Image (cartoon, rainbow, N blue to C red):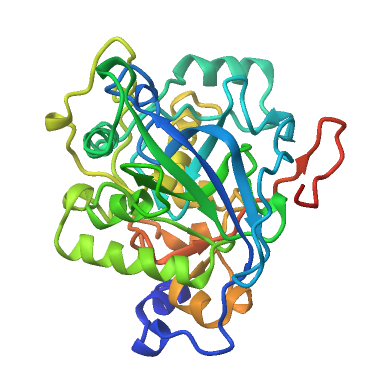
Length: 365
Protein backbone atom coordinates (compact mmCIF):
# COMPACT_ATOMS: atom_id res chain seq x y z
CA UNK A 1 0.00 0.00 0.00
CA UNK A 2 1.38 3.41 -1.01
CA UNK A 3 1.81 6.36 1.34
CA UNK A 4 -0.95 8.13 -0.59
CA UNK A 5 -3.37 5.26 0.06
CA UNK A 6 -2.46 5.30 3.74
CA UNK A 7 -3.08 9.05 3.90
CA UNK A 8 -6.43 8.74 2.12
CA UNK A 9 -7.48 5.92 4.42
CA UNK A 10 -6.52 7.76 7.61
CA UNK A 11 -9.25 10.40 7.53
CA UNK A 12 -10.66 11.04 10.99
CA UNK A 13 -13.62 12.90 12.37
CA UNK A 14 -11.22 15.55 13.58
CA UNK A 15 -10.35 16.33 9.98
CA UNK A 16 -13.94 17.28 9.34
CA UNK A 17 -13.91 20.18 11.79
CA UNK A 18 -12.05 23.38 10.97
CA UNK A 19 -10.08 24.92 13.84
CA UNK A 20 -9.64 28.63 14.47
CA UNK A 21 -6.30 28.55 12.61
CA UNK A 22 -7.95 27.06 9.54
CA UNK A 23 -9.61 29.86 7.63
CA UNK A 24 -10.65 30.56 4.08
CA UNK A 25 -7.78 31.51 1.80
CA UNK A 26 -9.62 34.52 0.40
CA UNK A 27 -11.72 37.21 2.09
CA UNK A 28 -12.85 39.07 -1.04
CA UNK A 29 -15.84 38.18 -3.20
CA UNK A 30 -16.52 38.97 -6.84
CA UNK A 31 -19.93 38.59 -8.52
CA UNK A 32 -20.86 38.54 -12.19
CA UNK A 33 -24.53 38.99 -12.98
CA UNK A 34 -26.28 38.05 -16.21
CA UNK A 35 -28.22 35.41 -18.09
CA UNK A 36 -27.55 31.84 -19.12
CA UNK A 37 -28.93 31.23 -22.59
CA UNK A 38 -29.96 27.60 -22.81
CA UNK A 39 -29.21 27.34 -26.53
CA UNK A 40 -25.52 27.13 -25.65
CA UNK A 41 -25.96 23.60 -24.29
CA UNK A 42 -25.79 20.26 -26.01
CA UNK A 43 -29.39 19.02 -26.57
CA UNK A 44 -30.40 22.67 -27.15
CA UNK A 45 -28.36 23.23 -30.32
CA UNK A 46 -25.01 24.17 -28.73
CA UNK A 47 -22.06 22.21 -27.39
CA UNK A 48 -21.67 23.35 -23.77
CA UNK A 49 -21.52 20.49 -21.29
CA UNK A 50 -22.37 20.15 -17.60
CA UNK A 51 -19.41 21.92 -16.01
CA UNK A 52 -18.75 24.91 -18.30
CA UNK A 53 -21.31 27.70 -18.73
CA UNK A 54 -21.29 31.01 -20.58
CA UNK A 55 -22.96 33.96 -18.86
CA UNK A 56 -24.16 36.85 -21.02
CA UNK A 57 -23.42 39.78 -18.75
CA UNK A 58 -25.84 42.55 -17.91
CA UNK A 59 -24.97 46.23 -17.73
CA UNK A 60 -23.17 46.92 -14.45
CA UNK A 61 -22.64 43.18 -14.19
CA UNK A 62 -19.47 42.97 -12.09
CA UNK A 63 -18.93 43.96 -8.48
CA UNK A 64 -16.36 43.22 -5.77
CA UNK A 65 -15.88 43.70 -2.04
CA UNK A 66 -12.71 43.15 0.00
CA UNK A 67 -14.47 41.41 2.90
CA UNK A 68 -17.83 41.05 4.61
CA UNK A 69 -17.48 44.45 6.27
CA UNK A 70 -16.57 46.35 3.09
CA UNK A 71 -18.88 48.14 0.68
CA UNK A 72 -19.33 46.75 -2.81
CA UNK A 73 -17.36 48.29 -5.66
CA UNK A 74 -19.99 48.31 -8.41
CA UNK A 75 -19.97 48.61 -12.20
CA UNK A 76 -16.41 47.33 -12.59
CA UNK A 77 -14.92 47.40 -16.09
CA UNK A 78 -11.48 45.84 -15.52
CA UNK A 79 -12.28 42.68 -17.53
CA UNK A 80 -13.54 44.48 -20.63
CA UNK A 81 -10.46 43.90 -22.82
CA UNK A 82 -8.57 41.65 -20.43
CA UNK A 83 -6.84 38.48 -21.60
CA UNK A 84 -5.33 35.33 -20.21
CA UNK A 85 -2.74 33.75 -22.46
CA UNK A 86 -3.90 35.91 -25.36
CA UNK A 87 -7.55 34.91 -24.99
CA UNK A 88 -10.13 37.56 -24.10
CA UNK A 89 -12.04 36.70 -20.93
CA UNK A 90 -15.15 38.44 -22.32
CA UNK A 91 -16.02 37.44 -25.87
CA UNK A 92 -17.46 39.57 -28.68
CA UNK A 93 -21.01 38.70 -27.54
CA UNK A 94 -20.42 40.00 -24.02
CA UNK A 95 -20.16 36.52 -22.51
CA UNK A 96 -17.81 35.25 -19.83
CA UNK A 97 -17.07 31.53 -19.71
CA UNK A 98 -17.49 30.09 -16.22
CA UNK A 99 -15.74 26.85 -15.29
CA UNK A 100 -17.94 25.57 -12.48
CA UNK A 101 -15.70 25.40 -9.43
CA UNK A 102 -15.14 22.22 -7.47
CA UNK A 103 -16.80 19.83 -9.90
CA UNK A 104 -15.91 17.71 -12.92
CA UNK A 105 -18.41 16.21 -15.37
CA UNK A 106 -17.75 13.19 -17.60
CA UNK A 107 -16.15 14.40 -20.81
CA UNK A 108 -18.56 15.12 -23.65
CA UNK A 109 -15.99 16.20 -26.25
CA UNK A 110 -12.34 16.14 -25.25
CA UNK A 111 -9.67 16.53 -27.93
CA UNK A 112 -6.21 15.69 -26.54
CA UNK A 113 -3.28 18.00 -27.19
CA UNK A 114 -0.19 16.42 -28.72
CA UNK A 115 2.71 16.47 -26.25
CA UNK A 116 5.66 18.74 -26.94
CA UNK A 117 8.79 17.32 -28.51
CA UNK A 118 7.16 15.34 -31.33
CA UNK A 119 8.64 15.55 -34.80
CA UNK A 120 6.48 16.27 -37.85
CA UNK A 121 5.87 12.60 -38.64
CA UNK A 122 4.85 11.86 -35.06
CA UNK A 123 2.54 14.88 -35.02
CA UNK A 124 0.76 13.58 -38.11
CA UNK A 125 0.39 10.13 -36.57
CA UNK A 126 -1.06 11.67 -33.43
CA UNK A 127 -3.43 13.85 -35.46
CA UNK A 128 -4.64 10.89 -37.53
CA UNK A 129 -5.96 9.14 -34.42
CA UNK A 130 -7.15 12.20 -32.55
CA UNK A 131 -10.86 12.95 -32.14
CA UNK A 132 -13.20 14.64 -29.68
CA UNK A 133 -13.38 11.67 -27.36
CA UNK A 134 -16.09 11.31 -24.75
CA UNK A 135 -16.95 9.32 -21.67
CA UNK A 136 -20.16 7.56 -20.80
CA UNK A 137 -22.36 9.91 -18.84
CA UNK A 138 -21.16 13.14 -20.45
CA UNK A 139 -24.32 13.49 -22.51
CA UNK A 140 -26.65 12.37 -19.72
CA UNK A 141 -25.14 14.82 -17.20
CA UNK A 142 -25.63 17.70 -19.64
CA UNK A 143 -29.20 16.59 -20.37
CA UNK A 144 -30.05 16.54 -16.67
CA UNK A 145 -28.62 20.04 -16.15
CA UNK A 146 -30.57 21.39 -19.12
CA UNK A 147 -33.82 19.83 -17.91
CA UNK A 148 -33.27 21.40 -14.49
CA UNK A 149 -32.52 24.85 -15.94
CA UNK A 150 -35.68 24.68 -18.04
CA UNK A 151 -37.74 24.64 -14.83
CA UNK A 152 -36.39 28.13 -14.03
CA UNK A 153 -36.28 29.47 -17.57
CA UNK A 154 -37.97 32.46 -19.15
CA UNK A 155 -38.45 33.61 -22.73
CA UNK A 156 -39.70 31.95 -25.88
CA UNK A 157 -39.04 28.29 -26.67
CA UNK A 158 -36.39 29.32 -29.21
CA UNK A 159 -34.69 31.73 -26.79
CA UNK A 160 -34.92 30.30 -23.30
CA UNK A 161 -32.74 31.88 -20.63
CA UNK A 162 -32.18 31.74 -16.90
CA UNK A 163 -31.20 34.68 -14.70
CA UNK A 164 -28.02 33.91 -12.82
CA UNK A 165 -24.98 35.25 -11.08
CA UNK A 166 -21.52 33.74 -10.73
CA UNK A 167 -19.47 34.33 -7.61
CA UNK A 168 -16.02 33.44 -6.37
CA UNK A 169 -13.97 34.19 -3.28
CA UNK A 170 -10.83 35.93 -4.50
CA UNK A 171 -8.64 38.84 -3.46
CA UNK A 172 -6.86 39.64 -6.72
CA UNK A 173 -8.51 39.85 -10.17
CA UNK A 174 -5.94 37.30 -11.33
CA UNK A 175 -7.26 34.74 -8.82
CA UNK A 176 -10.56 34.44 -10.69
CA UNK A 177 -9.24 32.79 -13.87
CA UNK A 178 -7.68 29.50 -14.87
CA UNK A 179 -4.97 29.18 -17.50
CA UNK A 180 -7.62 28.83 -20.24
CA UNK A 181 -9.11 32.24 -19.49
CA UNK A 182 -12.22 30.84 -17.81
CA UNK A 183 -13.58 32.34 -14.61
CA UNK A 184 -13.62 29.63 -11.95
CA UNK A 185 -16.74 30.21 -9.89
CA UNK A 186 -20.04 28.98 -8.51
CA UNK A 187 -23.23 29.88 -10.34
CA UNK A 188 -26.53 30.60 -8.65
CA UNK A 189 -29.58 30.42 -10.91
CA UNK A 190 -32.73 32.32 -10.02
CA UNK A 191 -36.31 32.47 -11.22
CA UNK A 192 -36.09 36.26 -11.13
CA UNK A 193 -33.51 38.96 -10.47
CA UNK A 194 -33.15 38.23 -6.76
CA UNK A 195 -29.78 37.29 -5.26
CA UNK A 196 -31.16 34.06 -3.86
CA UNK A 197 -31.58 30.88 -5.83
CA UNK A 198 -30.01 27.46 -6.41
CA UNK A 199 -26.27 26.86 -6.58
CA UNK A 200 -25.87 24.64 -9.66
CA UNK A 201 -22.37 23.48 -8.67
CA UNK A 202 -23.88 22.00 -5.52
CA UNK A 203 -27.01 20.77 -7.31
CA UNK A 204 -24.93 18.82 -9.83
CA UNK A 205 -22.80 17.15 -7.14
CA UNK A 206 -25.60 16.31 -4.74
CA UNK A 207 -27.63 14.72 -7.56
CA UNK A 208 -24.63 12.74 -8.78
CA UNK A 209 -24.32 14.31 -12.24
CA UNK A 210 -20.79 15.55 -11.64
CA UNK A 211 -17.98 14.42 -9.37
CA UNK A 212 -16.41 16.69 -6.74
CA UNK A 213 -13.01 17.89 -7.96
CA UNK A 214 -10.92 20.21 -5.80
CA UNK A 215 -8.03 22.66 -6.26
CA UNK A 216 -5.86 24.36 -3.67
CA UNK A 217 -7.23 27.74 -4.79
CA UNK A 218 -10.56 26.82 -3.15
CA UNK A 219 -11.43 27.79 0.41
CA UNK A 220 -11.80 25.10 3.04
CA UNK A 221 -15.52 25.81 3.33
CA UNK A 222 -16.07 25.48 -0.44
CA UNK A 223 -14.33 22.10 -0.37
CA UNK A 224 -16.24 20.86 2.68
CA UNK A 225 -19.65 21.65 1.21
CA UNK A 226 -19.01 19.75 -2.02
CA UNK A 227 -17.14 16.95 -0.24
CA UNK A 228 -20.17 16.16 1.91
CA UNK A 229 -22.59 16.37 -1.01
CA UNK A 230 -20.34 14.09 -3.06
CA UNK A 231 -20.13 11.52 -0.28
CA UNK A 232 -23.91 11.48 0.02
CA UNK A 233 -24.37 11.06 -3.75
CA UNK A 234 -21.86 8.19 -3.80
CA UNK A 235 -23.45 6.46 -0.81
CA UNK A 236 -26.85 6.62 -2.50
CA UNK A 237 -25.43 5.70 -5.94
CA UNK A 238 -26.94 8.74 -7.57
CA UNK A 239 -26.39 9.63 -11.21
CA UNK A 240 -22.97 8.75 -12.62
CA UNK A 241 -21.82 7.20 -9.34
CA UNK A 242 -23.70 4.04 -10.33
CA UNK A 243 -21.08 3.44 -13.02
CA UNK A 244 -17.95 4.76 -11.33
CA UNK A 245 -14.99 2.37 -11.49
CA UNK A 246 -11.84 2.17 -9.36
CA UNK A 247 -10.20 0.21 -12.18
CA UNK A 248 -8.83 2.06 -15.20
CA UNK A 249 -11.29 1.36 -17.99
CA UNK A 250 -10.17 0.27 -21.47
CA UNK A 251 -10.00 3.26 -23.77
CA UNK A 252 -12.63 3.29 -26.53
CA UNK A 253 -11.41 4.93 -29.73
CA UNK A 254 -14.92 4.50 -31.15
CA UNK A 255 -16.53 6.55 -28.36
CA UNK A 256 -16.32 10.12 -29.59
CA UNK A 257 -18.45 13.22 -30.12
CA UNK A 258 -20.27 13.44 -33.45
CA UNK A 259 -22.20 16.66 -33.99
CA UNK A 260 -24.48 14.89 -36.48
CA UNK A 261 -25.52 12.12 -34.07
CA UNK A 262 -27.44 13.05 -30.91
CA UNK A 263 -26.50 11.01 -27.86
CA UNK A 264 -29.50 9.29 -26.34
CA UNK A 265 -29.23 10.19 -22.64
CA UNK A 266 -31.11 7.04 -21.63
CA UNK A 267 -28.47 4.90 -23.33
CA UNK A 268 -25.46 6.97 -22.28
CA UNK A 269 -24.28 4.48 -19.66
CA UNK A 270 -21.12 2.51 -19.00
CA UNK A 271 -18.23 2.24 -16.56
CA UNK A 272 -16.16 5.39 -16.19
CA UNK A 273 -13.18 6.80 -14.31
CA UNK A 274 -12.67 10.34 -12.99
CA UNK A 275 -12.60 12.77 -15.95
CA UNK A 276 -9.18 14.01 -14.80
CA UNK A 277 -7.83 10.49 -15.36
CA UNK A 278 -9.63 10.18 -18.71
CA UNK A 279 -8.06 13.44 -19.95
CA UNK A 280 -4.63 11.92 -19.37
CA UNK A 281 -5.49 8.46 -20.61
CA UNK A 282 -6.61 9.76 -24.02
CA UNK A 283 -3.21 11.14 -25.18
CA UNK A 284 -1.45 8.15 -23.60
CA UNK A 285 -3.55 5.72 -25.66
CA UNK A 286 -2.91 7.68 -28.87
CA UNK A 287 0.84 7.66 -28.25
CA UNK A 288 0.76 3.89 -27.74
CA UNK A 289 -1.51 3.08 -30.69
CA UNK A 290 0.42 5.36 -33.05
CA UNK A 291 3.66 3.73 -31.86
CA UNK A 292 5.09 7.16 -31.10
CA UNK A 293 6.17 6.31 -27.57
CA UNK A 294 6.10 3.22 -25.41
CA UNK A 295 5.34 3.04 -21.71
CA UNK A 296 5.22 -0.02 -19.48
CA UNK A 297 1.78 1.08 -18.21
CA UNK A 298 -0.40 4.12 -17.59
CA UNK A 299 1.32 4.81 -14.28
CA UNK A 300 4.67 5.20 -16.03
CA UNK A 301 3.08 7.73 -18.40
CA UNK A 302 1.66 9.74 -15.49
CA UNK A 303 5.17 9.86 -14.03
CA UNK A 304 6.24 11.97 -17.02
CA UNK A 305 3.65 14.65 -16.12
CA UNK A 306 3.78 17.39 -13.49
CA UNK A 307 0.36 16.95 -11.85
CA UNK A 308 0.57 17.38 -8.08
CA UNK A 309 -2.05 16.98 -5.38
CA UNK A 310 -2.78 16.82 -1.66
CA UNK A 311 -5.00 14.39 0.24
CA UNK A 312 -8.21 16.32 0.90
CA UNK A 313 -8.63 15.69 4.62
CA UNK A 314 -4.97 16.53 5.23
CA UNK A 315 -5.25 19.70 3.13
CA UNK A 316 -8.19 20.75 5.30
CA UNK A 317 -5.95 20.34 8.35
CA UNK A 318 -2.71 21.84 7.04
CA UNK A 319 -3.49 23.72 3.84
CA UNK A 320 -0.52 23.99 1.48
CA UNK A 321 1.72 22.65 4.26
CA UNK A 322 0.23 19.19 3.75
CA UNK A 323 2.31 16.50 2.06
CA UNK A 324 2.42 16.90 -1.71
CA UNK A 325 1.99 13.90 -4.00
CA UNK A 326 2.29 13.28 -7.73
CA UNK A 327 -0.87 12.13 -9.53
CA UNK A 328 1.10 9.03 -10.57
CA UNK A 329 1.05 7.98 -6.89
CA UNK A 330 -2.70 7.53 -7.20
CA UNK A 331 -2.59 4.46 -9.44
CA UNK A 332 -0.74 1.15 -9.14
CA UNK A 333 1.00 -1.04 -11.70
CA UNK A 334 -2.25 -2.98 -12.29
CA UNK A 335 -4.23 0.19 -13.13
CA UNK A 336 -6.16 0.32 -9.87
CA UNK A 337 -7.00 3.83 -8.65
CA UNK A 338 -6.16 4.57 -5.04
CA UNK A 339 -8.61 7.46 -4.72
CA UNK A 340 -12.23 8.40 -5.17
CA UNK A 341 -13.35 11.71 -6.68
CA UNK A 342 -13.10 14.23 -3.87
CA UNK A 343 -10.23 12.46 -2.08
CA UNK A 344 -7.58 14.74 -3.60
CA UNK A 345 -6.94 18.48 -3.87
CA UNK A 346 -4.95 19.39 -6.98
CA UNK A 347 -2.47 22.21 -7.36
CA UNK A 348 -3.90 24.95 -9.56
CA UNK A 349 -1.81 25.97 -12.57
CA UNK A 350 -0.80 29.63 -12.66
CA UNK A 351 -2.58 32.11 -14.91
CA UNK A 352 -1.87 35.79 -15.53
CA UNK A 353 -4.63 38.29 -16.32
CA UNK A 354 -3.43 41.16 -18.52
CA UNK A 355 -4.95 44.31 -19.95
CA UNK A 356 -5.07 45.19 -23.66
CA UNK A 357 -1.52 46.54 -23.45
CA UNK A 358 -0.14 43.36 -21.92
CA UNK A 359 0.19 44.69 -18.38
CA UNK A 360 -0.87 42.48 -15.44
CA UNK A 361 -4.18 43.54 -13.87
CA UNK A 362 -3.74 43.73 -10.11
CA UNK A 363 -6.41 46.19 -8.97
CA UNK A 364 -10.21 46.28 -9.03
CA UNK A 365 -11.57 49.22 -11.08
